[in-house]
Length: 153
Image 1 (cartoon, helix red, strand yellow):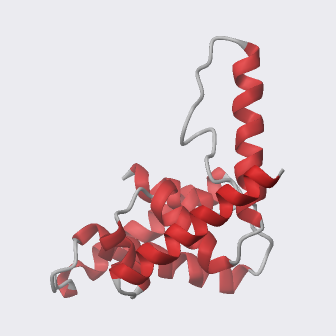
Image 2 (cartoon, helix red, strand yellow):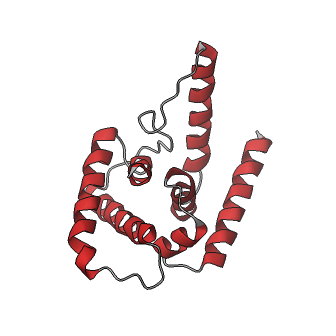
């Protein structure tokens, strides 16, 4: 599932670590499938909860600095026809990474779940264990804050 990989890649320092962790997540999810109960929560939210917890466990074990590559080249290859387009895409990616690095961990997690993983508000709420309204409000505020930061520069 490319969405899981993109989410993991945005939270790890390189492609190899992201691929290994994604494989571990799917193995863990497969082992947990017999115990899965719907409870009105979409399956994808359950899967991302497994991913979220796996990443948190990995970070506790590793304690190394994590590079914030929200949109890795391997996940979103750029096929521009002009060198200027390549430079612009690279510059925009750096700008996004810089803006996200200024956010606290919880807000950055919201943005990654929404845009790197492509989850809906409902799925995000299930992953984070929060109410949909709280997730929607916090995401809206975070995006407004990012827009204000970008305009101020």
